[in-house]
Image (cartoon, rainbow, N blue to C red; front, side):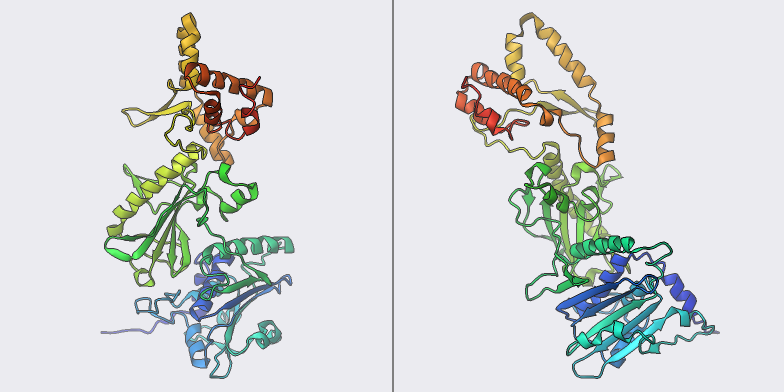
Length: 499
């Protein structure tokens, strides 16, 4: 068999690898993965602004590497993704250190120290590689001249590693200013707080992560332990894959948050609609917020929509299943094996249904079944048509409707005709467009109604409950206190029936 040696040209290959799709945030997270795998307990990310000469340094106190280990780590494809790894290893392809760094900078310097050996320092410089015409890959010993202080090696202690990015041509582009830097840092902080939220903190198995001297606080997408959540399940093991763990969550409705800032924080870095669905973790590190994993019904995939934005499912997989879950080089996408999709579909349907009910009913209290303590029936009912479409009509079981029709006499027919006209002209499409445009359901005009108008409406409801339904005044007040839109106006309800 005749063969030829056709090594790739280093400069051209790396320039191609720079376009894999990393952002600054995902690239920095990839470097932190290596720190965690090295047993670090402290990781410090420092972005130094100096215009075109800006640089980024990532320092950890992990086990470090000797010269031979560092050389191997700096090689592209340093490990075979098919080989068995430590269960706590966050890497896979042996590419992250290089591809993440090259995606942001033209110069990568790594200085590392092991407790039992001398320090080692190696550098890749794309300006050097692009001039190489053959198949050589010249790796340079030591930092760029004049960059020794940027490494900050005096702060390493007994062991650790420093990753230095210089010539940030993919970040500091023409027109980039210090204001843009603040935006980059804000995005980076939000991403790190989300991706490593189960790994950063003060516990013995967590790391202290800092960004420009500020401690990164974890952002918990599930609001674990929040008493207002509609659903926080136990962990499930999937049948046929007991190492895959699932936990279902439905977050509280906006009305249940004490502060508007708490609601805004719970939305996440990309906003409520984008943060719904499956959160896929490997060794507690978030790989991807994957929406609904292309699951769906009747041949259609579920989109990320407003109605299900409160649904979030935690999915933990081991690193032994990377290939089966199609984890990509960026560790940003995943796809479940076909054999597990029916189980995931069933769990997702359960969570979506609960989330939709919370969203639609605005987080109202659930009736406890007793006549005196339950809320009044909802004024709108959803009706499924044989075609599968959903229609909406006013409830004929509502207390005010029944009280009015009992007293309507000859006007009953006209009142019913008016209600049917209202039902038939609900501007569903306009409401949907307004919701999509503003990422928030339209408010009820009753929420902004002046007190006199609300009192007049409450008195009509109160009279219907007392004189038509036979409730005591105390029972009627209690029932109104559990009925929207009056449930937040205890001050007005308390005065009903006392004049």
